[in-house]
Image 1: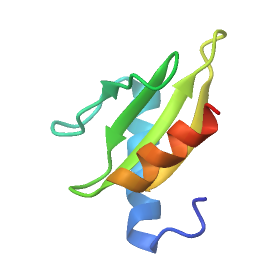
Image 2: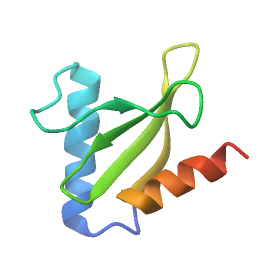
Image 3: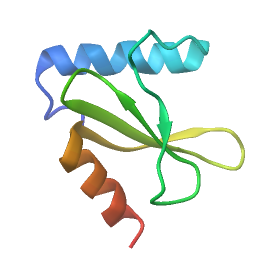
Length: 81
């Protein structure tokens, strides 16, 4: 999933994951809970790209999808089927 991203988006994803782990998201990241499943979240990498992840019961994050907005959300929805 990550290897297919352009290098710039790979670096941005790394920054977002670091920010999430530190509990300090940069302004404009727009962390939001999604309605597609329990504990699914989306965070903005840039204007077009999103990182969708889930928080498991034990508090561990699980990457679901990363990519353009609609593509990432569609992949997250498919993961629920």
